[in-house]
Structures are given as structure tokens and as C-alpha cells.
Amino acid sequence: MRWIACFLILLSTARTTCGDDAQAAKDATIVETLLRLKTVDVNSNPKLKDAVLRHLELHKGTPKYVDLIERLNLRGVEEALLQLALADPASTEGVRAGELLLKRGQAELIAARIDGDDEDVATKAISLLGYVDNKDALEILKPLALDDQRSRPLRTAAANALGRSRLGERYLLRVVQDGRLPADLNFTVANVLYASSDDAIRIEVAKHLTLPATAGSKPLPPVAELAKRSGDAAHGQELFKTKATCIKCHKVRGEGKEVGPDLSEIGSKLSREAMFVSILDPSAGISHNYETYTAVLDSGNIISGLKVSETDDSITIRSAESIDKVIAKSEIEEIVKSTISLMPADLQKTMSEQELVDVVDFISTLKKTAS
Ligand code: HEC
Image 1 (tube, rainbow, N blue to C red):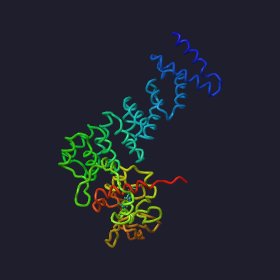
Image 2: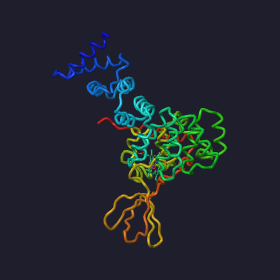
Image 3: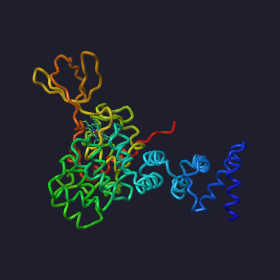
Image 4: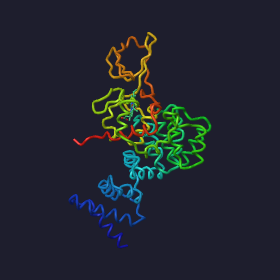
């Protein structure tokens, strides 16, 4: 009873004019009290709710934020939870926000982001579903991985997300066994299932899919395994410029051609795992502005490459050999954007496993310098 009396006094004074600090202190006490009075529904009292919302605002970005929303059973903040979850789906806070949303039956809210126009947000929403432990999440991911109306990066993200749970792994395996896996996901799914901690899954997938082979036709281990190996960065630098041919398409600190992105700071952008994936399965996540265009000309010639510029009458296409060709639009019969990267998918074949690790070791050292 004492608590309730004290609480009512607090509430009645909550809106009096006082400094921000005093207000914050009052809000904090209200929240503290609400946490003890389990029977009060904060959602049905606008004044209380305002106090809680003000208090929450001060705790944005801290672990307390989601915790309070959950413990106070605060409603109407689903959009804020979603924003938090999508800001960093692979963080403790992001996952907690996502799990709370799903617990509250808001799977649709996340699904709507996956169906939206923003591919970056959609990819984050998909990876969020892979990190949360929830059945509804699996049900959204399953059809997505196989939906040929979806872009390859989205399907790849869905397959990777499914690979984060045992039920998801089993689903992927069944799809493989039934021969229903789209070929462009072979690498992603093999990589996920070969890394399973379940022996039976690893044995079964090996009957159907193989991982890319290096020189000497030796299949590589899954990327999760490769990323743990250490190599010789100096040797990797040498290979980058020679046998591995990376320099024919990538610039590093001013040296090299500009077919692919400049890799001078790639070590600050990608994890080691992501680097292996970039090399072994280049089309899985083609960076913006690096889509391959294929133009069929009236002459019957076909020209493929990156679109480096476009005017009213012409398009300039850069080939994999870094040769720019200006094509008059009047000569083009058809031009299509392809989902296959200009970066060859079998570069690892020129290298041994150790050499591949050395190359990744080298590009991992390419970090932003503090200016
Ligand atoms: C024939 C040209 C070509 C060659 C050779 C090539 N790349 Fe690429 N690379 C590209 C293109 C184009 C892209 C951008 C499209 C994409 O992401 O697939 C790219 C993307 C990448 C990315 C991702 C960059 C980012 O910002 O996300 C990495 C990492 C990379 N390449 C590393 C390498 C390494 C290492 C080698 C040598 C073993 C290599 N590449 C050889 C053309 C090439």
C-alpha cells in the first residue's frame, strides 16, 4: 500500500514544471515503481506511458532499453524495436529486440521489410531472422531461399540465415536431397552444411554437393574453417600481383586496374569469412555499381562488362580485361543487367589452399589508416 500511495503522489506531480534532471529523476522513480507493481498496466494510462517513454528515450542504445519494454509489457513501440533490431541484427541488442517482436506475434512487421523495396534493409531483416531463435522466423525463411522471384543476394542471405539453426540446416538438406536447390545457391548451402556440427548432416551433404576445389582438385574446407587458418601476408601480396591475377581487376594503394572495387581499405570493410566468400562465390553479393551488363549489338556481337558511364546516345562498358568500349545506343539491340559477377568464380583453382589463405591474409592487412 505504501508503494501505491507514494506512486500516486509521484504521478500527480510528474507534469509539474521542473528541470530536465528533476523530470528524469521522477520518470525513473515511476519506472522503478511500475516494475514493482506488477498489476498496473502502463499501456492504459497515458501519463504513466509518457513517463516511461521519456525514460526509455534516455536509455536508447543500452541493454536496459529492450529490457524495460519487455518487463513493463509496453506496447506501441514495435516500430522502435524493429529499427533497433535492423540497425545491427548480429548484436545482442538487435537479437533481443527481434526476439521480443516475434514473441509478441509481430513476424509480419519483419516480413514486410523483407518484401519492401530497400534491398539492404531486406537483407538485414533476413539475417535478423537467422539470429533469433523462433519458429515463425524459420517459416518466413524457408520459402524465401527457394523463391526465384527474389534476387540472388536475398536468397543467399536466407540460406545463410537458415544455416544458423539445426532445424534450418535439416530443411536445407532436404531441399538438396530432393534436388530442389537452385544451382546458384550450391556454394552457399554446401558451405553452410559442410560446417554443421551434426555429423549426419555433413556426411549426407557430401553425397550431393561439393565445395570449390583448389589447384590439384583438392576441395576446400568450409569458409568458417578457412577463416581460422593463418597465412603469410607477404606471400599473399606477391600472389595477388602474379598467379592469383587479382591486380588485373583491383587497385591497391594506386597499383592495379579498376574493374572491381579498390581494395586499399577492404580489411576495414569485410571480415575474413566475407573475404573468402567474395573470392569463392563472387556473385553471392555483388556490390552496388558492379553489376555486369551484357549488350547484344545489331551486328550480333555481345559485349559484357561494367557500365562505367552513360550519355543520351551511348554507353561505356568496361570489360573484364579493363578495356572500355563506347557503344552507340542505336547499335544496341538489347541490354540486360546480369546477376553474375565479372569476377571469375574459379580463381581458387589457380592456387593451393594455403595460397588462398595467404591472399586473404594479405587483403586483411589493408586497413583504413588513421588520418
Ligand atoms: C576479372 C576481374 C576480377 C578479378 C581477376 C578479381 N576480381 Fe575481385 N571483384 C571484381 C569485381 C567486378 C568485383 C565487384 C563485384 C562483386 O562483388 O562480385 C569484385 C569484388 C571483390 C571483392 C569484394 C569487394 C567489396 O568491396 O565488397 C573482393 C574482396 C575481391 N573482389 C577480391 C579479389 C581477389 C583477392 C582477387 C584475386 C584472387 C580478385 N578479387 C580477382 C573483379 C575481379
